[in-house]
Image (cartoon, rainbow, N blue to C red; front, side, top):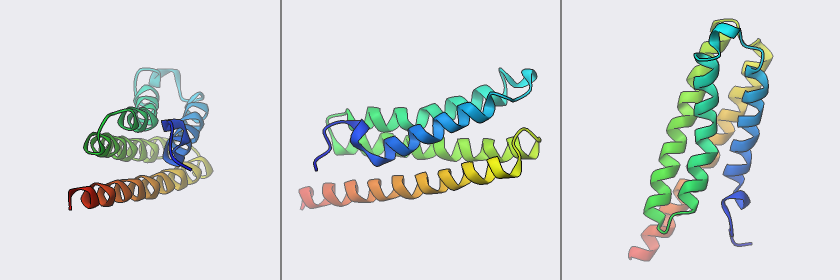
Length: 126
């Protein structure tokens, strides 16, 4: 089935699931973190599906690859912030484990999508 919209992409769907979970888990952060780690973690999480959507909406594979690279960077940022939140005691071990499992899955999905697009792009060039 061809991709008609970014919402058809498994990468976008999984990124949305991760973002929703991060919003739910960060709801209970200390009030002192509203403009700190809570805000930063939410923003990096939102950036992941947003970059996937924007890239898919662009006219070229090259641009899509660029935005997937941005999504991967935001994912690494979110992963770092998840680890920090755990170390600061804002997440329990189960929450951290669950979120890191999802970030690992997201990383593999994004890498697979990028690889597929790069191969498609290479075959057009040749």
